[in-house]
Image (tube, rainbow, N blue to C red; front, side):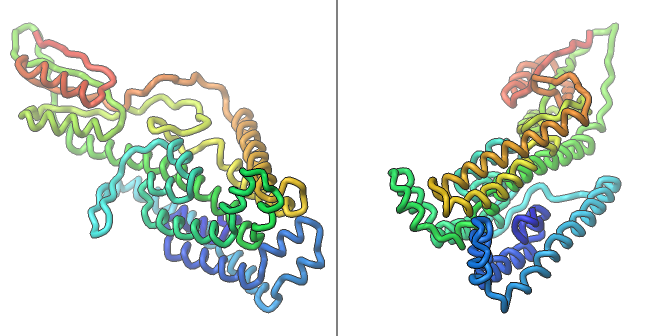
Amino acid sequence: MVIAFPGFGHFLLNKYFRAFSLFIWEIYINQATRLNQAMVYSFTGNFDAAKEVLDLKMVLMYIPVYLFAIWDSYRTTVDLNNIYTLAKREDARFNSFSIGAFEINYLDKRNPIMALLWSMTIPSVGQLYAHRIILAGFTLIWTAVFMYYSHFLEALIYLLNGNLDKSNAVLDAQWLLYLPSFYFFTIFDSYVSTVENNKLFEYEQRKYLRSHYQKYRFSLQKGSRVNNVLIFATFEHSTYLELAMTELEEYGITNILAVPLNNRTEERRIFDSIHHSDGVSLISKGMILAFLFSTVGASKGFELEWGPIIWGLIGAGSGFLIGFIIDLFMKKISQRKQFLLKRKNSEVVLIVECDHLQKERVESTLWKQFALGVAELNQI
């Protein structure tokens, strides 16, 4: 992603200070050198105009910072991967809930498809959905800047009313070419962030269940009549599971055992969901090619009949489709076929010991908190 726009790779790594610095530098140096305008001339074959519009006094300053952004994001990714490996081996703690003066932030499961769809409306909304508040505010401000100076919305209104010539005339090419990379990055970032947060939520909850609800030992008594009953339930990883356990504890029921399951590995899915996030989906290359093709399409569109907006959309759709097909093809030839589970997974087994008088209350609580299944075992 950093190849598309300096700073994007660092945003994915949550290295905000470096990301902000590189992003603002890219805007400044691009505006100073008129690089986007030169790209439009270059893609349309007008090389003399491209040379003429470039400001040679500053253009050589662009390349070193651009290459540094690529190198630093790669190096930082390797370092963070090593830190992640150590943290996982050492079972390191991390915060799952934060209350600040401006925001309450917490880990929760979100639907990656919803994050993607919200980002397709206005950049930054997907980040808000994924709780990436700092990035959401930053992208919202720059969305307004790019839309205003490129006159994109004005051109879109003319286009929807059938005034193609007026739509093309009002567009500012220099500012317009920021939009493809910016727009598709926000979609990709919100999707990936939601997937990774879901995985982090499950990891944190597994750790919590093991430390708090695996200390009690059940004794299945047979041959003599006892007053206790064992209730078994299965859940997915969610906040409802913890709500169920804490509600039972409020009733005075403390004999609770929670066992997170290691489910069978499924075939990788095209899109991650709120219940299944393996972190590998078939949209990565599609988003990158959508940015590249939409940039070229918008540039060529200034000389073609349908104009830069329509050709930018055609380029984006074509790029995404090609990237999707490439990912799908690579997946098919690299992975053997597996049986695809098509129903919800039971991810946690919950065992509750209570007396017969509490049985109905316990079962009602479990069903209310969306247990996937509930069964009882009378110890008689």
